[in-house]
Image (cartoon, rainbow, N blue to C red; front, side):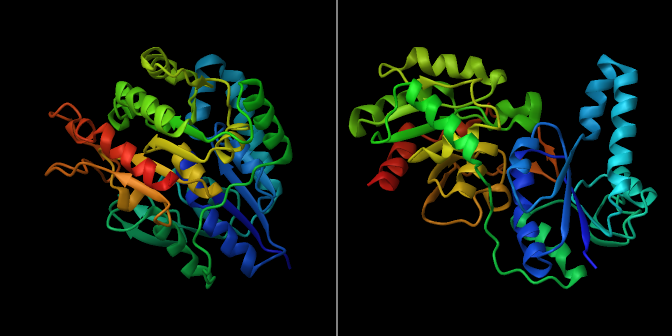
Length: 357
């Protein structure tokens, strides 16, 4: 009998990619299994490209709240449709990474017998098997996620992240880069000066100063004859504009032009990605692209490149108050993001130069 798994993760790009080693382990143990994935709408493209996932249910609680603000009837219909689509698949097992009791309650109501997840602040009361946690610390989130497989006796042999790039996405990316004047022989360095989209207004606390990105970009262009491309969504345009206007060597500004259907293909064509802590960094890691990342309030041991290695350099400035993001809470910063500002352009340039040499 084919086993049917439902993976639940309503969070951002990084968290979704952290579940890919779990998916690989399930498929290695049960090659014919059916895997459904319940995510938010934003990350749907990177899940649909993964051929190990049979069906994507893209509608989180956060998405529903936004739809309700526009139309009560549309939100109600979307919720009913989601319920019907999940129920008709008759899943056997739910792996719930949401840390929210409402998802596991829904799974129970849908008749999913085995519901495995984390008991954070008592929110695991509707799980049939649970791991008690008070947050993620001391080890990477991937290690926490893989721990849930112990309840299913599924061994883990490959902990690396996985991100597929469809042929269509890769072609669109190549065409976009070519139209921007970038040739295949060019040394291409991507810069993601925003990142942390799932943090909303608090994402600014993860951002290395835009002017430092500009100074860095000019040095890389001068010394390596590199082509620089700026990556980000429309909400990060203000950051990108600061960089573009401040640079002597004008970069290719792709802000707002690379949705998640194209972004993996663009990153795959980079020789190096320089970024803040956020989704683009994890995408680059999953695609085998070298990275230099700047970490501020968040622990790199928990949320950094995984698995860590010499091709991924994390730069940080340790302070007594760092990391201040603990147990899913960001402390009020009374030091004006000093942990980020103290990371110098020289530090990032030297790290990039070493990876490019």
